[in-house]
Length: 192
Figure 1 (cartoon, helix red, strand yellow):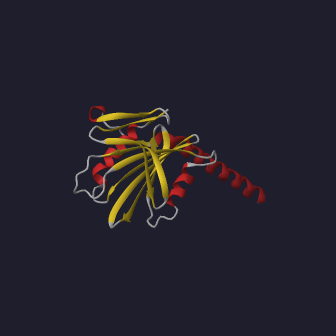
Figure 2: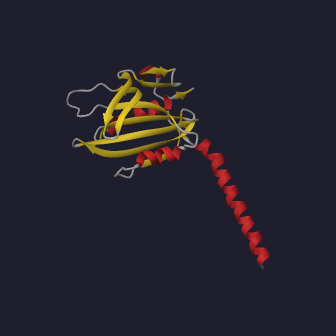
Figure 3: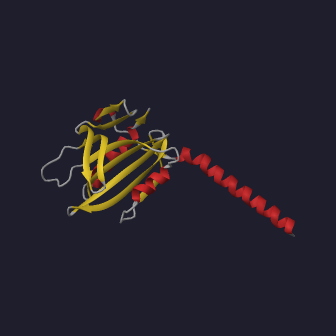
């Protein structure tokens, strides 16, 4: 009887392992890929230093090496794209890209978890995507600053020991207006 239990347990473990292997082996081919912005409606930004290029709407402007100081400290982004803004809009719509070196033990999951530390709102996560040719994650959350509702989408991309962090934020009521533009920019991202 003991022999049958051990045999059954071994077969069960093998079946579970085979199922996990099969789902991992096929999951990368099933990852969603965003359609890039159309080239006749966009311009290409190339950053040879950090090895990436991305398309952005032709009506937008960009600033390189953009720095700001927030509640969590000082941040420098390699580039920040901004849509044309009217005086009535309380918050500009921006997409910014940061490139950071990470230790060899970092995983995409650990980077996302680290970013969520201290967040009071449970974010929406999408792990089933591929950006720049590598599996990635997008996290969308909402916060309030200076009596404004702000929604932010973060794209976490880890290639080797380099993290590409792409953020998009806008006022809560305008967030959906440019969300497809953000996804189109992500779809056009090329990592060298």
